[in-house]
Image (cartoon, rainbow, N blue to C red):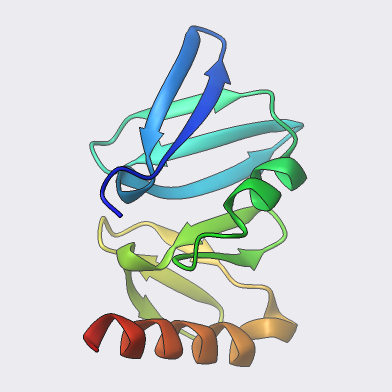
Length: 114
């Protein structure tokens, strides 16, 4: 589990990102930004949909908004309109999916405990 990684191409080269270090991914203006737990940000030109597809087999990643894919291990709180990550960053939630997102997160946390 520790070694699961994603290989991404950015404007400065090719990177191997450990999934456990990936806090969230954001889509902005046809670019995809990977936010790592050490504070690094990698900007790539991958399509966000293909990033989501690539991470769809990873249970810890949840699409919480059409432009945010979050690693649930880094979620501190889920509120009514957004969620707060361990680093204090707020991420907006897709309003019509809030209940589903909360359920998904709860189920994920219960899994982690067993």
